[in-house]
Length: 484
Image 1: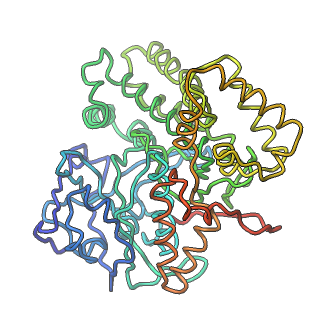
Image 2 (image 1 turned 90 degrees about the horizontal axis):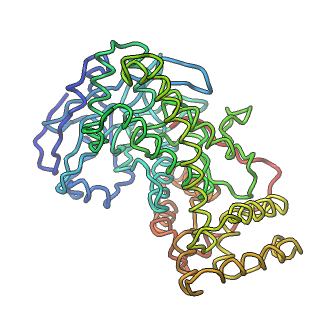
Image 3 (image 1 turned 120 degrees about the horizontal axis):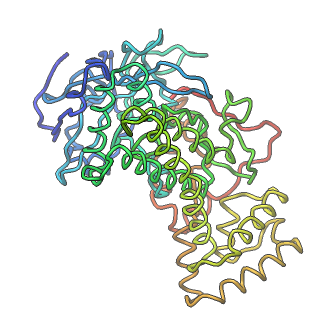
């Protein structure tokens, strides 16, 4: 593997590689034939301290690596659709942590960088469509203010990948605060020693929960911190109508960032039972199930920490249970406060939840679009079936009375609603339109225009009007597929 000088702005370390060797394998990316940059995220490059003019496709594809890089593939396990499996970075290589000019650290990972010891027979590669999809959705999530991994770049490899069809090979450079997952702790607890587990937990505390360093029980503080971040994250998903699609424990990070954009999508018509993933035949990860599934995943995280939470087993179990039982309350608080903001409510009243639930029930009954309903409420537009019903008229009267009982002006209410209700989201038909143009025609202009619109989804600009339109009616349900 060719190593190069750091003239592009690379300032890499790999503190994770100081952990016990059972937690990872040293692994170079597999070189590719003809790398070519398809999309480069200049905003992310600048934040990382990288020179966008000098970034080379060979580096973003793994043919060359910066001098200070220490490439590894991380080991982890996970419950996939409720079933425990030994997993790991099967097609991703972590080249190191970029230390930015501001002193922050971000993992730099090449997704699609070749096979690893954890590939389980796979080729370690990825297709262009899925990598561009992750780029679009993750940048859309960032614009919405939802914690997420970011995409620095997508490059084609000049090599085919073989799935159901032959696809163009591609590699995505993923940027994350951490790639440590619930499944990483499950691996350490199940397959490592207690020393391995403690080393991982100490590392997580020092790097990602520094306020827990001096806590009376740092591992309990770590657990509580992860629970709080996930409660806030899942509430943001629900408030935006986002459906992850594959909430396995290996897809939940300790930093509370959305990660692994496979069969994800945004809900159009409001229906709590909505599922897009082709493999989720039982609806385990449906929209309405995301909060309880997050709680289930966090219980698995707590289980993995039991050997180090306390010296006495019963006390350890008690601490874990008490922490996990806080999740529903924390989630409810974040979600309800978010819903208040979407309705322009600054204060708290006992009947707020009932007011929200009644609106959601009306939206479900009239098959109203989730995003556009709140957008129309913000703008004072009443242009769908929902707004013509007597039930809505009654609800609107109660909503108006509720707003009058707070000190803020109508202008304040409007500003809060505009900050809380996106005008645009990465609508599924728009994402597919962009992917088709890029993958089938080599036309990236559709994707670039979509990305520009998604940079500030709360702008309520004239340009965004076109992207608020719903897809043409169809009898064929929208389906998403694993592959990223």
